[in-house]
Image (cartoon, rainbow, N blue to C red; front, side, top):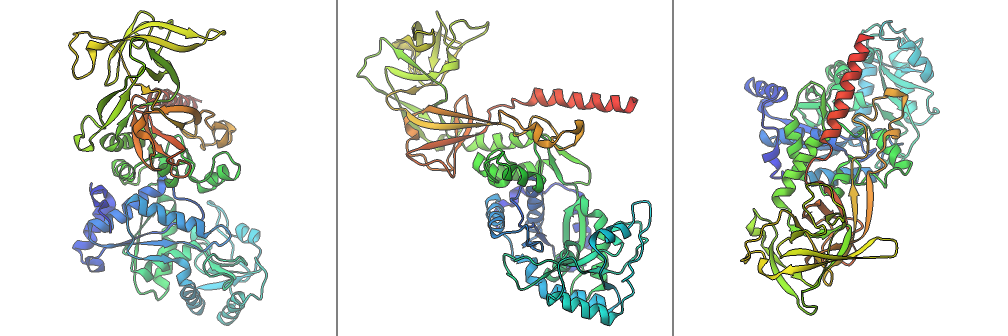
Length: 578
């Protein structure tokens, strides 16, 4: 396995306590075996990252094993594309699996275990239509009713099940159900369906099978066959645990795993339902599963999130059974901390305005030695050319500025980062009054590192030499939704109505310092004063640079989040009073 163990969930939590007790009691011979079992019907998202870090992290901590297992029992929605993306994301996150398994590896064994339940009188073939089966299951307050096919003989059930496998019946004609208790207070125990007929080509087994096992039957047996000791899943499966245990108890599986549930991650200002993410993709509301605005791991990688930041985030939020609603700012702070420690600093002007230094020689070029990182001298430095004509940010000049505006203005002066203090001289405008150029004079006694003037100015701005600038396209990404919980269903609105119209701003003609020429895709930088950016892994090329904004230098959403949180609390109080 990888060296990601420094980010494993070392802090004590209830799952770790269970493992410690099991090891102390000699259960499973003290061994720890976990698995990460995604269905290959979409891309992994930030919620999966919590499960990945937990399962692989515990295996690392206890010198155990963790399998990557694909729950591929629903061929109509699954594909090799999704499976390959899952493999790539788990590896990118920093983990290696002990073995790669697939539920489809066990189709023959699962069929045999189903036949075993039939022979024990614990499973039967039901020929009621699906809507009638749902009706007979009852409700949370009313018990279910037994199917008229519940008392079929063992011989008849075995024969019908074999014929189901042989493809003699149409889809939906029969299902195989466990025979448990139609009056159980737990609806999951009211004769759940174990197999259904579904003629669909499987991406691994092709058309070999026309019956497919249900998740609740497949998952526990797969755990047992792989020797999993602690089967970790999210809380929505807590009500399924009695069925998990029932299948293990009533089949001759070689091992008895233990299911343990923990709370799923709910990241605010986004959605993590695969169905809803797929809807965004299919409707073209995002550019794909790896759109940098998506909460998928592929999207986060394209946006420039380092894998160590995601592991750090998962460690910070912890593991419990309590509801796990997490502010987006917590994730972004982990990203900032990781990038702050490792990202070279460079100068980039996103909305350029030309500044002409009227007293600087036209044919002169100075080379300024600029460190890549003020706290990381091992990253070295780069020469940055300084010339008569440079670009500055358009927002760094105002003709009629408000109070406490310390950037360039008429009658004012600023320091150019790593360079000189410049004094305002004049502006050049077009016929409509738009500023085309700003003219300034350089104070030659104020070069950074050798300033002998004693002058002090309050503003320092970044810049790029016009003659050496590298052109780039920059995508400024923001949160995909404007609402903290866009899919809560409140106000009767669909989650898509809360899409942020400003989640992507495309900036053409940006100017980067000359050292950025030939930047490789995936390279991360801090653009000084602008934020952290990455060269897009798909669209950026050394001769045609495209950068994605990963995250701002500071949390610009904190006040908005606080206001929305107060509004939610006020709404809850008003609801309680009414």
